[in-house]
Amino acid sequence: MKKFLIIALLAITSTFGLAQNTECIAPAGPGGGWDFTCRIPAANLMVELGIVDNMKVTNMSGGGGAVAYAHVVSERTDDENVIIAASAATATRLAQNVYPGMSEDDVRWVGAVGSDFGVIAVRQDSPYQTLEQLIDDLRAGEKLSFSGGGSVGGWDHLKALMLAKAAGIENLKSIQYIDFDGGGAAMIEILAGRADVFSGDTSEVLSQYDAGAVRILAILSPVRIERLADIPTAKELGYDVVGGNWRAFYAPAGISDARYDFWVNAVDTVAHSDAWETLRDDNGLARFEKFGPDFDAFVREQIAIIRSISEELGLIQ
Image 1 (tube, rainbow, N blue to C red):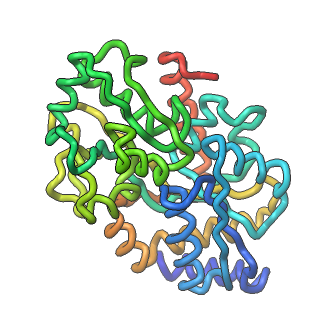
Image 2 (tube, rainbow, N blue to C red; image 1 turned 135 degrees about the vertical axis):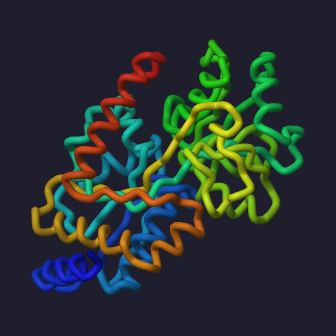
């Protein structure tokens, strides 16, 4: 499989020459999941594996990804040297019409390299030692603030709502959510004591967890992940909630089919590399790989599902 991918990639590369002056746009500030997706599997590994000559990372925050999406759709629609970090949060915002006047048809969906499962975390000095203690206070009406990347109704918010719903909390609108453009900014609020609970992704919390600054109460994965083997899943604790945030890329809609195939094969090659397997596991991501037309179909299905749930909760804008 690896040999086939490399041969295919070399064939496409020979048509274009080694891709030079490429760019990955992270639709948020430094420190969050989109930033990680651009910097590690794209800018670092695509260069290391000889897929591109160089790649710069541009942080373009605003509107929960809307600024970057609009920039690509309106100004970079035929730019063959740019890819953009995407995730389940991107699909959520498209499903909820957060990107006004734009849809999933306005870009080309390239591929996914892994899944970043959700976490519920608090500061290390928080009174909450367990998820059950936190849930008990929510059931009792305690006004706790959740902090996450993205807008109200976005993926990080939905994860908190899914947990509350699984815990039997009927008034989901009572869950206070403070939104930020990325997980890095949301984590700052937790560390500064301006929010109580972090609803984000594994890759966004690991550095602060390793530094002893935060306590992870639960992971929203189907089974425990190797990187955090001591942390229970929400399912283990009696809450049937799984929230996987896939890490992926899209490209401008107006690029040629040949260039689209180049980017699909580039992402595929990275995803199957030994270097990414190690980095993926070290950063707490699970294996999740879809490329080209298969990934396109997956994204469209996800958007339809999220749109249905959001309509039920009154979150469609």
